[in-house]
Length: 471
Image (cartoon, rainbow, N blue to C red; front, side):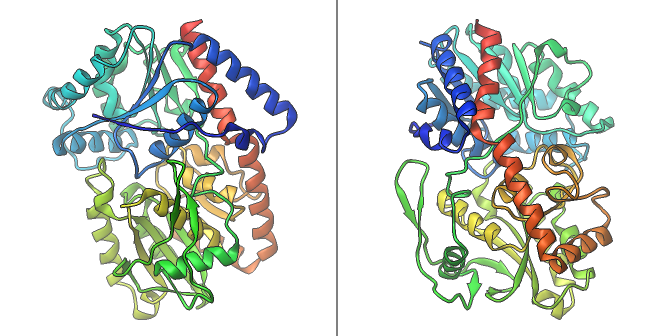
């Protein structure tokens, strides 16, 4: 287990985006939290320091919490290949999908418990009675009982789920129930994700948020986005390719690097192309191959290119299936006609500098004419939130937390039947043919994020939760 060091953020930057009434409310909640959390540590535990939405949220939330004077810290599990194979299986079944089809029973409980034993030993010397421990997602489930024995308040947060339970989700919750049911509180992103056996008196619904100042979401002009992508080696024919600086999470400044030998199926992207972009992990539930086929079948103008963008697969420690999904995407690309292959690009972004990775994602989203998130299952969908903040028109599946962000025809377009590839093609064509509609949806999308999905709302919800446990 290792600790991720987080520097306090200048919270005035966040509150500077808020109305006077909203700022005053946040300041009052922060003052109350400092008082009842005084002398306590809020520990956050998850499976990876980078490569997913949970890690990105923790970076921001902890920095802002520390910025208002709350002592909150972040620990990352050690795990093992067998441990992560089991937790990925669990991730899939909680989404109602079979994954690798392996067992979830007593033997798997034993593997998980043994893998977490060293991490629990580390925490035993750190966690004090009356501290708060916030455990994130199934990887941490077996820590609930042992950590409660320290006298700490233990909260288990689940960032994933499925709107309509099935036999597989029931299997997943049956595996988790004996591990987590002793928690002092539970947090979910949606009410639909809460299993039927869980008492509502312990349940809190808290939606995620984005950091508007991170390298992924900070302001970036069209010219600077083009310059960044050209310099990095993604965009061919950029008018002024150059290295740009961006804010790193440790408070220093990073600089875009040229990347030779990028993992880039389909070649570099023509500068004059209009881009349809989906950014996500290489995960079957994101349906990258479906997006590719829907785009290929749509008959869109020749200047429209598709980018399917994910991380360099070795850079995400808790997802053992990523490399296999990337292979499947390349196989599907190999089956496209040559004229389609030249307009479909599979992009693996480097992960050796996660802040530069975020900066490149920022540039790609801002360069996009349309952002897609055609997931088959989605817990919340922070890639949707990020694109909405950038005022991009979004086409996304009407599933999970995406439905809590997009109102169809108001601030984006929803696909009521995600596997319907013809519907995807029609939605893309509509936005590409109607730039005024696309711009209007994008502007409304940004307003939605400003009102509902910035960090002040998220931190206030956590403060309310901790108050119920401690006051």
